[in-house]
Image 1 (cartoon, rainbow, N blue to C red):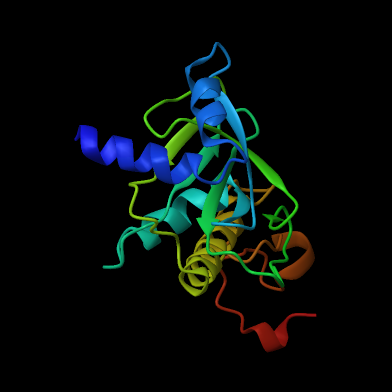
Image 2: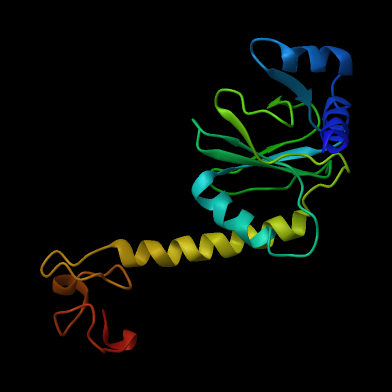
Length: 186
């Protein structure tokens, strides 16, 4: 166990300009070091409500996961990915940090303030596969979208509306559970 922690610490600290200073910062009062992105990894930061279901999907595949860091105050999770000079990640609430960006991290064996390792680095250099992360995020977004449709309720009777429509406006037969085909709706 100590060897794995030491390897994880060395791997993470290697991204710093001065690995010894990085380790001193981890042992200081703040417990956080600021490391450069773009050399060993890039960071994809995603809102927590999307990241956690995606992470569940990623943990179900046989490939070892990369590190994932949570900012509990900002309610975001950062996935560590291989460096990508193009960094073409786009989407609402998506933040991509590559070469020239920096990320604040605690030591792999610590949680400090608002920063917590959801999956700490294991020292092997394993990172998340970008295509797998993209697919997991798409699946999670689909699930969240589906759940959001069921959260809306009919203002007349309080029943969940599966498609977000309200009976007085959209359903000719007066209730969202009607079997009226979509083609009959205005």
